[in-house]
Image 1 (cartoon, one colour):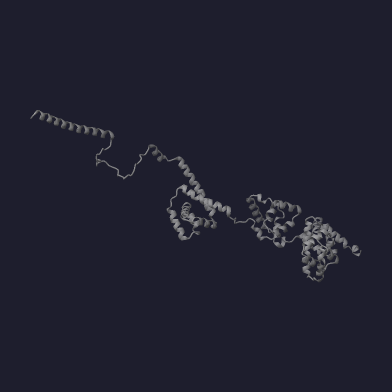
Image 2: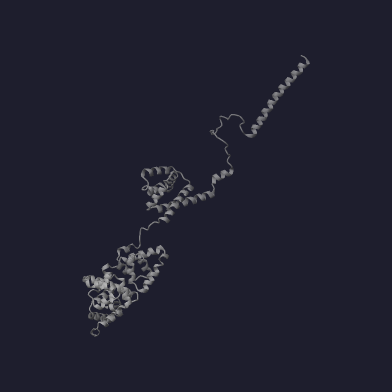
Length: 428
């Protein structure tokens, strides 16, 4: 071999050694790296070592942070507090809504109508049924919604899972609807504490409140028809009428609870009110009417007897006694006002069959232009005795009203009439 061939062979042998050395070095470095990292480094898993089942993952999977693990274990305290508060509010709203809807089919119908306008509203109705609970919802809406439709809504509600916040939003929407209805269509109180008055006559109601203070009288009178109220007010004294009128103007200031209490107390008291035949008779006015129908002699004897026995009762009776024959003795301004408030036909009927002096006193109260026609009517009119009595009662009522108003003293009128009809005066 030549020298050149020997040199080339030596270099080739060196390169082979260098190649194997590099391979050995790489293997050594790889072993060291594997030991330091703890990963299998392209090595298949050991069959004898248990492995978790592989779960396909997409994207990056975050490695749990120790702080996150702590939160998951203990939870957010503020979140728990807020959740508890929402649940408590939901329970309160549910109770309020059920309470307001019970007995109000009209509100339930309007609520269902509002929640049936579109798909979103129907979903809200389903959520409401789910939130209220199946039992309560069936009680409220089963009679309002067709059965087939309701069963379908109930099935959907059972499948609905709402968070506390979503349920709260639904309940608040319903509560707003109900608050609006309370303002526009308030619930009527089914129990009327003053309903007992419908079973009593005006006389019985007057008997019931005669000893009550002005405030109680006002409570009762404002709940009567205007004509009946006027009749009771006429029975009161002038001062008492004023007090009752003032109390009527203050009734709106009193709480509803007090009004109801007064009504229930009076209702209990009304159970012991005598019947109409007992309380409908006013003894004083009855005796006054009897006196007015008596002849002069008997009337004077009875009045003198009353004055001797009970002067106060005698004065009450005389103050309510109007003798129709004393019409000419009534002050002209009072007689003019009374006559002109009555129907002319009633006046003509009342004075039919009376003395000329009574007829003249009544006719002169009319305007001069109409007097001749009234006189002609008086001559041709022949009323029945009962018609005359009823017409004269109108005069009696009007004169008593004037006396109650303090504008006429019937006792003084009767005294003038008695003097005018004494035998001496009559002879003159």
